[in-house]
Amino acid sequence: MTADPAKSLTPASVSERVKNDVDQLLQSGLADFSLRELLGLLISTAGAAERNVYLEKEPADKPNGFYDRCLQLGTLPIEVRVPRTRTGDFRPATLPSPYRRGYSEHVQSLLLGLLGSSRSINAAKDALQKMGLSSSEQDLEQVATQMIEELELRNSRPLDPDMLAVFVDGKYVELREADKLRSACIYLAIGLGRDGKKRVLSCIARPGRENLEDWKLVLRGLIERGLRRVMIFIQDDFSGLLPISQSFFPNADVQLCAVHLQRNAKTHLSKTDSTEFQQRWRAIKSSWDVEVGNRQFEELCDRFAKASPSWMGELRKKRQHYLAFLKYPEPMRKSFSTTNVVEAINGQLEIMRRNSGGYFHSEQTLKFKLGLAISSLEDGRWRTLARGIASALPQLNALFQSRFEQTQ
Image (tube, rainbow, N blue to C red; front, side, top):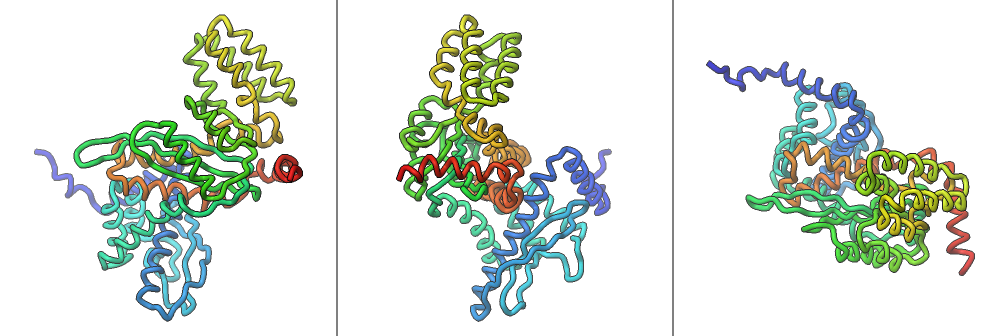
């Protein structure tokens, strides 16, 4: 006779499973970037949303900023921003009990389950309720709504008119609609400001496949919100997108993604030729001079002209757009040659998609998790300048001034 699975699932076994899951994520390298930061953001965001609910009930009290605190979730150190009020009477229920640094095993299980397994907003709300965030359904609804509304605000806030770089890319996802799955494309634009900080400028999910009309909508929206001067625009070679980008930002260099170029080589060339192509391209990327890079690029096109004449012809026409990154300081060339900055968000979405069963269970769920992924980067690793950006920032700003400000 088969044993009852519910009876075998003791609290000890649940705790052990949670610990094993955390250990496996740490060993895989994913936890440092995704799990740890997402958990920290979840706790911080829930606390801020709970403070908003509290202040509506206590209008005499006022918000008083945040303070940083490090908590322990199993073996994971979690950095959180704790909201304060002027009276000091408010304390987020999402924190462990006073004078305790870590969470109980029960709450650890709920937090991990909320991020790793919640397939819908209702499931997340249920977990928040079990954590003791609130006993009011109205309060829970407001907390969840505020998490989603933050994503909407990202697509409407005024933008800084100047960006050193803008990275754009699209990602396909599937959403559940009634009893059917429909495809959608997430259009992402990430800016590198003159202060060296990365920030999401636009993040819009549109039904159907990636298309030029939606890209026009996205790029036009950036301009309408205030973006004016961009030094380099990094994108993939989606058919027809290059002239549109040039028309919206005529004074920007447009760089076509080198990673997509290398993938295309495997499609257009034989395995042996593709290997040689990759070697030659690596030599071009390490060129110390733009002219040297141009000459090596022409030699590359000559070498494979017979093997793939039409593709080599296209590469020749777009040479300046594949080599635009060579104009910039050496520490930034790798970053400026690809759309990998956008992949930081796409990678987290992919993890969430798999944890949700291969698709997102509603448009609201997608917005919730997308906002979580974005905020985890902006409030996490993007808050500190990367070493390469910090070292190259004076040169980048000097290049920006010489292009845009001395001509005015």
